[in-house]
Length: 319
Ligand code: XMP
Image (cartoon, rainbow, N blue to C red; front, side, top):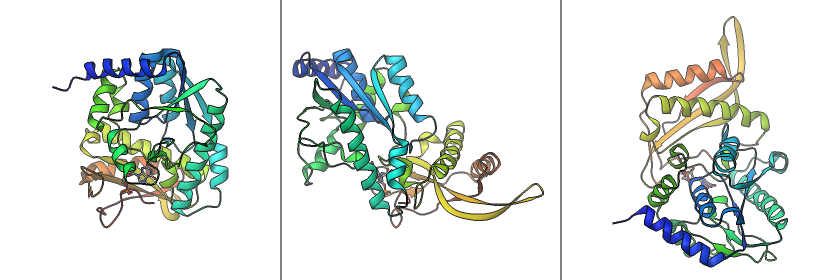
C-alpha cells in the first residue's frame, strides 16, 4: 500500500541528511511540482530554504499574488518575488516566432534566476521539482545531466560557475503521487488539481508578438472562462482549458455603437497523456454564457470563438 504520510517522512529524513545545515534555493513557479517541493522542503529544513519566484508578466490572473499568499503568508516560506515583466516583454518585443519566443522566455528566466541565486552566496543546493516522467524524458535527451532546470522551463541549465548540488525529492514519483503528497502537506487543492500551464505561459497563448496590452486582455478573458468552468462543475471534467489571444480585429456592435476589437479563442480538451486529445464537447449554453461575459466585460474583445480541432491534427496550444 502506498502511504503518502510514510513517504513524506522518508523524504524529509533524506533531505535533512543530504543538506545538513546548508542553504537551499528553489525556483518556485506556482506549478504543482515546484510547489510540492517548496512545501516539503519547508517542513524538512525550515528557513534554510529560499524560494525564488520569477513573475514574467505572462502568468494568469492573480497567479503571482496567489503564490505569495500560499507560500509566504500561509506557510511562512521565504519567497523572493522578482517582478521581471519588463525584462521579459522587452526581450520579446518584435518577436513573433513561437520557438524563438520560447527560447527568449527560457533564457530570460535563467538569467534572472541566476542573478537572484547568485546573491545567496551561502547556497550550496538547488532544489527542483523533477518528477519521474521528467527523469525518463531527459534520459533520452542531450540535456540529461546534473545541472538541468526542468525541461518544463525550456531551459538548458544553470551557468557552470554555480556549483550547486541537486535536491530532487520527487524524482521517483508520478504526478498523481506528487498531488497526493501536496494535499497531505496542506497545499490548497485548487493549486494541486490545477490544469497544466506551460512554462512560457501566456507567451505562447498570445499569437505572434507579445504585448502587455494583449496579456491584460487575455488574462481577463481566461479568468472568466476558468471561473465559469468551475462554477458549472466542468473544470475537473476537462484536462486543460484556456483562452488564446488572436491579434486580429473583428467588427461587432454594442448598443448603438460599432466595435472593432480583438478576438479570443477558447480551447478545452480531454486527454489522458496530452499526446493526443479530443476537443471537449462543452454545452452550448455554457459557451454562450462565457462568450457573452467576455464580450460584455472585457473591453477590447469583440468576438469569441471555440476551437473544435483535435490533436492530431492540431496541438493543444496554438503555438
Ligand atoms: P501541445 O501544444 O504540444 O501541448 O499539444 C501538449 C502539452 O504540453 C504543454 N506545453 C508546454 N509546456 N512548455 C511547457 O512547459 C512549453 O513550451 C509547452 N508547449 C506546450 C501544453 O500546455 C499541453 O499541456
